[in-house]
Structure formats: structure tokens, C-alpha cells
Image (cartoon, rainbow, N blue to C red; front, side):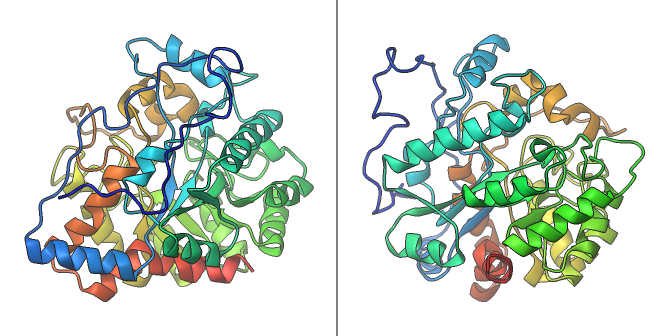
Length: 405
């Protein structure tokens, strides 16, 4: 493979309009390709087919964190210090090497500890968003995406549409109107809960799921009215199902896998997957370390990841599955270790089965690498052009056009 940068990219480093060391603290960030650049090989004929597919169809990642960990991950301190500065660093150049036309950017998410070690505070979420929007305004490669047509325009220009997302609704507290505020600031997707419960419903770490609350129902209704996409990836089973049933528009699970392949809380049940599809929604397959494993593989790699994809595809049909790898730039396993409590990785990924931890997920380690290898795997496994077009972006575009009105 010849690595190609997008034609619309001109060099830009995050916050380069400021003076390092004077206007902000200098952080030693990791290299985006610290684990290497792993590419699934194709024949010359297959490479030509891939190029045609990428030219023809929009390629959308439904869930990513295209920012960085620190280089030093031997202790938590450097990473925690970096997160407290509230100046998340987006990987513009790294994304320029990807094949993506649109990325759903979940920003600091559960690592947003600017003012509190517990994270998810309203003022911190607004700080994070405002800082990123300011940085975005000083470059022209990432386009702030607010409509489905923005994705097509970005693709045409050789750029990337960036959809800003709040992964869990805890920051709105008991204020329905904060949904309007977030929409006004450009947020186009929000999760009902993260792993912890909030005023809307139960998170998936809970042993007792009370389902969507009355307040949660009001929030679903408001999100439908303003045109904000609803995500149930981190909800408890009943809360997620209730949200699907309550919503008048299709919803997504942007980054999950199938319990039928790997039975942990982090994975979705057949009942939930079918409900999302029956209401016209889409399921994005998750690739963060040690999530979409399988009994077949007993490790986490590209094949175990695609085993979840094929299970969901066979269960609900190819019109309702896509990809939300949930990757980042830097040591993702190290991040999970450092933020195990905040990200609930231990409580939501427990299994009775012993497995060997991987240092990184080869072929899926970051948003760029995942974008290369997912369509390559599909080509190598006999999927048609139409099928590939649907799962890399067509299915998502259908839902976005229904919701983002």
C-alpha cells in the first residue's frame, strides 16, 4: 500500500496559532503510529477496487476519539496532568492519512477531569467543546459537520466532516433545555447514559437496571424534536431498549459488539440489536482493546472484531450494521488501565473466560489504521461493492438524513 494523504489537507498542528510554553503547557504527546502502521495486504486488482469504492461511497466512522495519550504511560501522572489542562489535542495530520470522509468525535469523554476527578461536569464539557471549536476555526481540513450534506461536501473537497458528540448525558443534569444548548453549539449526537447511571436511566455497569426514567423520556422526546441523534451504546439493557421504543426516530448503538459472540455487559443482546434495527437504526461495531473478543479467537484482533460484525449482519441484516471503532492515537490499553474506574472498563468487560491481554489491537489500533483495514477485510471476504458501500457509510447516511432534519 502507498500511504496517501487527503488532497484537502494542509499542515496544521493543534493550537498552532498559540505559542507553546507561553500560552499553554507543553505536553509530550505520543506518536499517532507508535505501534506501527499495519495494513491488510491486497492484490493489485483488489487495491484498484478499493480505490474505486472509496471514491464512490462516503466512509463514516460512527465513534472515535481522534486525540492522543501522552508518550509516557508508565504511570498515570503525565496523562492525568495532560487531561486537566483541558486542551485536548486532535490528530489532524493522523486523520489526513486515513480513508475517512466523516468522523464522529467524542472528544475527552470519560477522561474529562478538568475540574473534578469524577468527570462529566457541565462546565468541563462546554470548556472541552469550546476549546476544540476554537482550534477547528483556525484550520480548514476538518469541517464542523451539522448536516448529512456536510459529509458529502467534505468528501468532494478531500476533507473530513467532524461530528461532535457527547457520549453520555450526565452533564445536562436535570435540565432538558441543555439539549437545545448543546445542539446550538453543534453537538449532533448524545448518549443516554455512559456506564454510570444518571437522571435519564441506568448505565451498563449496574446490576439492577431501572430502565428509562420519566426525565429520560422527556430527553428522548426533546432530542427527537431538535434533531439530535440518540446513542445507547453504554446504557443498561432495559434503559437502551426503552430508549429505542420511546424514540420517534431511528437511534444508533454507535460502538458495541454482540453478546452472542462475547458475553460481557459491554456487548449488546440479540433483543436490543433487533429492536434498534426494527426501528430503522444502525449498530456500529466497537474495536477498543479487549471488547469485541470472541470464543473462536480468544484474543482481540481484526478477525474477532469482524466476527461481531458478521454476527450482527446475519442477525439484523446488512442495512443496519456499520462501524464505530472507538479508537484513539497513542496507547489505548494504557489509557484503559489509567482510567479504569472512570471508564468502567473492569466492571463492564468482566468475563469468566481467561484471555491474554494484547498490547494493542493490530489493524485497528487507531482511527487511521482502522479506516484502512475494515474495507480491506470486507474485500478479502467476498462482500459486494453495494454491501461495502452500505456498511462503511450508506447505512449511517440513511439514518442521519432521517434524524438531522
